[in-house]
Length: 306
Length: 306
Image 1 (cartoon, each protein chain N blue to C red):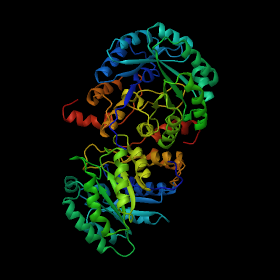
Image 2 (cartoon, each protein chain N blue to C red):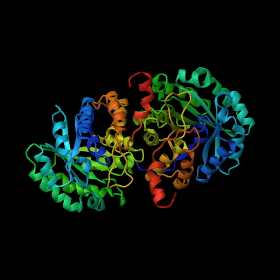
Image 3 (cartoon, rainbow over the protein chains, first blue to last red):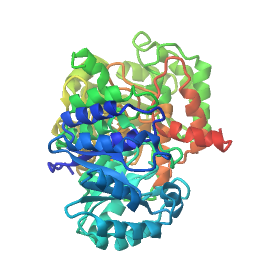
Image 4 (spheres, one colour):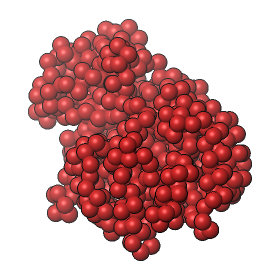
């Protein structure tokens, strides 16, 4: 199972990680984290989201963070948008890589973006049609495995939705998201295998949370099935304000360490990343996660690395 | 990959979990934990070890804990011994299930049991020859994947050692142990597949630590390759005093939850186990681990379960 194929990690800490934090993080501090993550080797990042300031005051500075992130050479900067209106704002602010989200679960979609899943599918089609030429696109399918309100999600519902969504833009990157962290590697492996076998066009990504300790295990299962793009958050920051009990995203340092042990490159320097992650846990109001940071901390101190 | 085959969990908390705890846990408290774990459905347990009182004062009450544990109907109670002398003491105290340990890594074996690996192999052969008829046997191969002193362990060294060890008693249960928690699922899957293909006689077990967050992922990899017996520790208690940086065993509640989600029975009642685990973290001097306990804690409180 060991492979030397490189993987792409999408650092979602500045969006998914910062989003649920109550105390406002100064914009300059956010940009400093983005820059340090870039310096550690991160080359894809979900830097912010264009969403309602009222619903998510923490991300009200999206335009500034976007501009600063896009100034870093070679960094692919995606921004999350929930609908056409906020997509327009993102494009106006200079975004060149849009991340759209809809949920397989009706209840979660209603809670997250206040419309039915089918309405979101139609919104996605309109949004794709209106994107400026050359705009890159990520489609996030939230609750692809499990819903905080309804529990396990039928894989056939995901496949049926993909049959609608993939033809809308067959070269989009599609992330199947474990929103709650409650799925298991066997479920992840099976759904990715089915989706990939059915739709060769998209590139496939996995977005998972580590609430039940299976974050990295699920990443590896998606990798086994052919996914090569993985979302993760430095220091395991994250959570979903609309998914009760869902704590952090899988920690970037845990994913980098694990792939590294398997001889699979993520292009990220673990030591530099750990320095950023150690600081990330100190952000006021942050909920951190992951294991590798603590496991390596004493060694790093003992050998004078940190 | 979903299977309905049942798995056997060996609860090692009362041995591996209690062993590194400094403050002495009263014998009655230990027996209470053993009993409550049994009441939650545990049917195999490493209840204690017969080792030097001076080296491990926490387990000086081994004989009492053994007697009380063996009084529980249907509970298979194994006790760890490092050599012939302590095996004799265990048998004398009434043990009917011996767990012997040796390390693939010379340095770790020297640190752990103060002799070369080859001397331990010969000790194992003598010990097996002298066991009373009907005594069950578990052989733990420590550092089968990674050594705290020497890093990654060559799989061929493990296979060569198994070629010596398996014929000594071909129906023993053999545990390949990830002593440091630094191995990856791909390594675990490959080594178990090789070992099982080569030696059909033994039943195969996996003993892992969760230091780097891969405890459950490695359990699932061993399961994929055919292992059906897994060591785990309630509340993720554990660690190895001779393996610097190795924190807790994989948490029993994490393993029970994960297999449960996959439709695989461990025979253990998660709610009752969680009650014991929540108390386990409060033991003075204990280092706890695992994720599921915290993830479910708020839900259990909210619904009045705990």
